[in-house]
Image 1 (cartoon, rainbow, N blue to C red):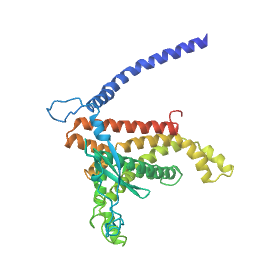
Image 2: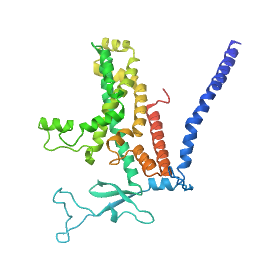
Image 3: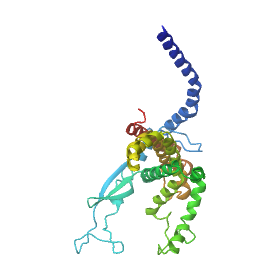
Image 4: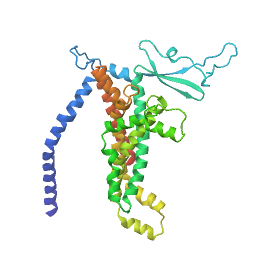
Length: 356
C-alpha cells in the first residue's frame, strides 16, 4: 500500500513540475523559437535590410550561393625553351596557371577561395561566395587552436591555484582580470601592441633585444593575422577555462590523493589516474562552452581585422549591415547554427556528457 501511495505521489509531483514549467516553455517559444523560425524563413527569400523592395521566395538559392564549391587542379606553367616548369626568381616557388582560367564561369562565376598542394600537385578551391568559404575556414582554425591552448593553459592555471600556497586567494582574483576586461577594450589594447612600427610593443621589444631586423605587420600579413587573433583570445579566455576546471578540481575528494600517496603513487600517476578521470565531466562542459563560443566569434575579428579577414559571424554582419542582404545573412545564420549544433552533439557523444 505504501508503494502505491509513493508511486501516486511521484506522479503528482511530475504533473506539478510540468505545470510549473509551462510558463518557462512559453517564454522560450516567444524569445527563442519564434525568432529562430523567422530566420529560417527569411533565409529562403531575397529580403533586403532596411529596404521597401518587395520580398520574393527564392528557395535554396541563398544556400547554393554560399555553399557551392569547385576544386580544380592547376596546370604548371612550362618554359617553352627549356621544357621545365617556370620558377619565380624572387621566391623560388613553382609557377602555375591562374585559378580564374580553370574555375567554372557558366552558369555562375566561381572565384578562388584558397589554394593548396597535394602530392606535388597544385589545386584551387573556388566558390560562388569565396569570402564565406574563407570565413568558415578561418573560424574552424581559430576554434581548434584557441580552444586547445586555452584548455591546456587553463588546466595548468587551475592546478596551480588549486594547490596550497600563500596568497592563493589573491592569485585567483588576479587570474580573472583578463577575462573581466571587455573584449573590445582588450582587442584595442592588443591592436596597439601589434602596431607595425616601433610604436608597437612587440616590435619595440624585438628591436630592443635584437630579435628582429624589420618590423612585423601582424594584422596586415596574411600568415600572421590568425596567430595574432588566437593569441588575443587565449590571453582573454584562458581564465574562464581555468575557472570552470577549478570548479571541477574542488569536487575531487582529498582522501583519494592521500590514499594514493600512501600507496606510493607519484604526482604524475595521481594526475592521470585520479585527476583527469574525475575531471572529465567538468572538462567536457568547459570544452563545450568554449568551443560553441569560439565558433560564433565576432568582436575580436571585427575590431582588429574588420574586412581584412572574416569569421563566420563577422561576414554575417557584413552581409546584413553593409551589403543589406538580409536573406543571405539569414542563410549564413542558419549555417552557423547547424555547425554549432553539430559540434555540440559531437562533443556530448564523444565525451559522454549525455550519460554522466
